[in-house]
Image (tube, rainbow, N blue to C red):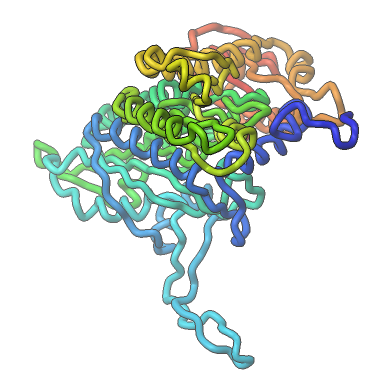
Length: 508
């Protein structure tokens, strides 16, 4: 335990090892990413956090459009009768629905405003849009010539969560949801896999977050779907995070919403639909994958800023020269592009202590921090610090400008390699129930969050095993990996036959 008044060894307290859940919240606070709002379970996304979301949105949107999708917007309010049409869907979301029952406020007997104008039919605040979009598509689709429909929307949704955590699970959050309609099952299945590949590519190559592509079990499947594909990632506390899902809905929603078309032979058919989405949960995933005990670490491809330049001077003597040096350096660096994005560079000339300034940017996770003092100015050099490794070195200015893009790529590559190494070190093949229990049982009763990582186990396919895993170990089957090889074995719980291994883990 540190002595009173002792200087902390890290910028974030508690550290990951001391209290991971609280560390996560303190990283968000220190990086000024988001904060709790006055509305229970909702969050205010601050400019630095929203800049991350804007970058996610921009890059994902480009990937969607490369695969032929276009954007549209559909209503926030959904008549309750629409949701009732799909029984499995309403069962899956009923407890999370926020319901609008009145249309206005009016003065009550005591003069206080009370709800008035009761609606003839209650409206659900969008938890997801399959039903309302399905009703619209039913009007748009008449012939096979109208297909496929490939539409995405960027929107907010509301799910009345009881236990919330910034970015990971809030009552209202931002997301995108794709909804497509196809003439054949094969086309819908192809779409479901195509969009999962888009998500996996984005997670690994933009977020530097390695994922396992897999299929959800029947018990974990999206309500009303025929099949749900997902990407699962391991956080630094070794828990899993479901980072994105792609659903093959078959003809279930087409039948409930009456999406029919006349095929080339003149026969009336029900269409096949899909839906897929990711949310601001991705920001939570980046925080928990890359950040350290000094704060947030932003992957360069999504960082709000790539480089911050901090001029250092003791007095007004030489200040103008150093500022001019920094501004000309900013201009040179900003003229470059990292992947398909202009390099974003800031000169921080705020009148605050140099140490406070530096730690502020460290906590925000800017990939490269550059300091320019009188000696750097005189030598035509810069002092560069990497956020991911903490490495610091003086570099000739010309060399730094020439190698900027390579340096940013090196950080991006290192973050992905580090996350992959962490996952590999905490993934274990397990074949017995006793070993599984030991793997997921905290060795220290005072630290119940300390547990195993990913367990690759055989499973007999039963919901009863899933129930037992959840009740006894708080473990779920995260997915059946799409690249899982046929490997006959015995279920880790029942010893009954199993065709292949699945991924088991504790999860967010």
